Amino acid sequence: QVQLVESGGGLVQAGGSLRLSCAASGRTFSTYVMGWFRQVSGKEREFVAASIWSGGTGNYGDSVKGRFTISRDNAKNTVYLQMNSLKPEDTAVYYCAAGPVIRGLVTTARMYDYWGQGTQVTVSS
Image 1 (cartoon, one colour):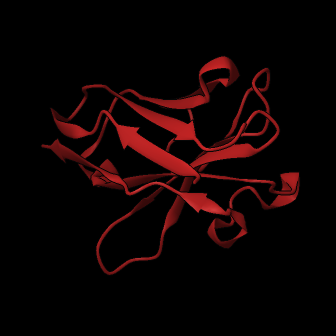
Image 2 (tube, rainbow, N blue to C red):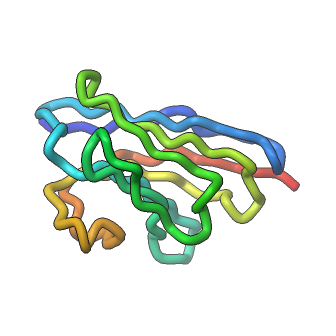
């Protein structure tokens, strides 16, 4: 059974940092795109970042470029999201996702096959 389990969310003040982790199990994800999305209640799921392969620089949503960094450790089947200079508008539930996604579609949530349960990130002003 494939599982993605996020951790590392919490409450932080504006300007602070958090590091999210997503541990995958049930199969090897080294050939899959690993991504992060976020969602605020009542709004559509928003693309945050994606890692196409472990040596790549990552793809990022415009709202997080320069502040967030995605990385992955294929040996541990884990992907990370380092979030710096957090803003109140970063408050959301953050979801980890994985799938055999075509490079040009990594920002599209429905292209991912597997999803975690989400972790809440709250940034206070």
